[in-house]
Image (cartoon, rainbow, N blue to C red; front, top):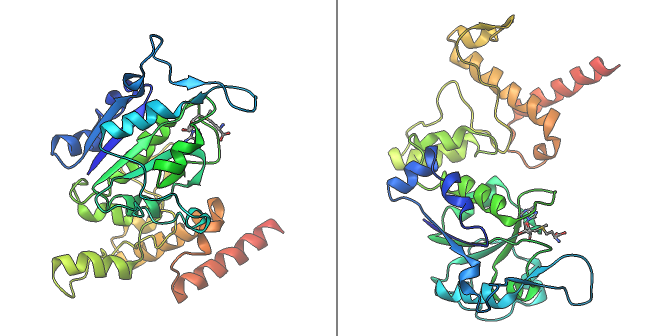
Length: 298
Ligand code: SAM
């Protein structure tokens, strides 16, 4: 998979991507990340990339011409047609680039749709993604209208530039590219991951029909948060690892982990429970945890 990043700070990226999985993925040729200097596409002696906003107001705006030239240098022209309002409202498919083979162009923006694990999975299926990093008050809106398939926000806060957001998106997406993680299955057993049935169907199909893939002591997250993890020593600062993890009973461990996933999700991200894949047993666990919490509050 290839990522092209258009930025006024290309020097930001090499350091970020010289470590761990992303470095190995690049070395193995699974992922290519190229940062392009927006100022290289200016033609005045000050190499200006920004200008004052029409209508007045604070701050500066990234001008459209250098961005359009930078995209052209990557072989990317305007989208085939301007989106209708209905299409703009339905910007839900990462693959909606209108020309086949045209890379998906993403504008990093606090006004964008939220970046989620589900979206990272969609993006990981693409061959090439171009990320536009805003600065100052943002990017001239016509760049969004003409070239971008999606505006993407990494959270409900305002960063000073799109570079950190681009790095977050690249990191989260590239680790889902097949072959990047040493153990293919490890991305499946993390927060926001797929439910057991999907994991079995997906990896099971790869390993041969009918093979069981979910380890005996684990659960696919099914849209929930991960469970807590522990390693040696068994006792640290007076706190012992939960006994259940030491007894070797996989069924008990599995059940405890599921309960912890539900507990943590209820505590930190109750919104996720709405769309999570919960079994009858999970729902009973959830009811019990809620009832227990109510008793504690009283
Ligand atoms: N005026 C903009 C607003 O209120 O939405 C904020 C501009 S911000 C200071 C400069 C740039 O940082 C944006 O153009 C965008 O590229 C990036 N940025 C800021 N917050 C972001 C977020 N939550 N997610 C993704 N990119 C963000």
